[in-house]
Amino acid sequence: AKPRLKENATFPGHFLGVVSLSATTDGKLCAVSSLDGRLRVWNIEEKSIVKTIDPGPVEAWTVCFHPQGSLLATGSQSGNVNVF
Image 1 (cartoon, rainbow, N blue to C red):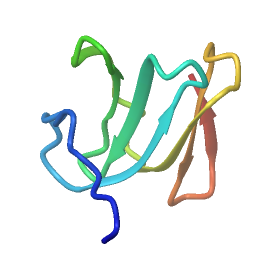
Image 2 (tube, rainbow, N blue to C red):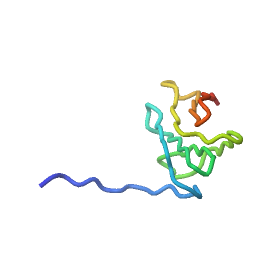
Image 3 (cartoon, rainbow, N blue to C red):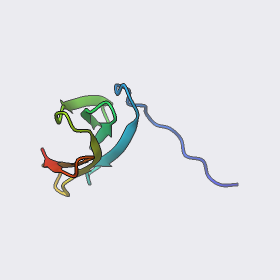
């Protein structure tokens, strides 16, 4: 039998579907983009929101942390890359 993954946590808060997520290399933070147009950065251990980012009128389709965790980049439907 294949080993089953166990769900450790659920991070609610988006009003529409999640489209992308990225964790920092140390595993402490996770950034999530959604069709509701917002980005949320979560503290994984504490299961709490660290920051909510409203990137403006374009949806953030992809999200990625810089390897050092200090910057967050998003890609949008309009073809732009935004760095926070």
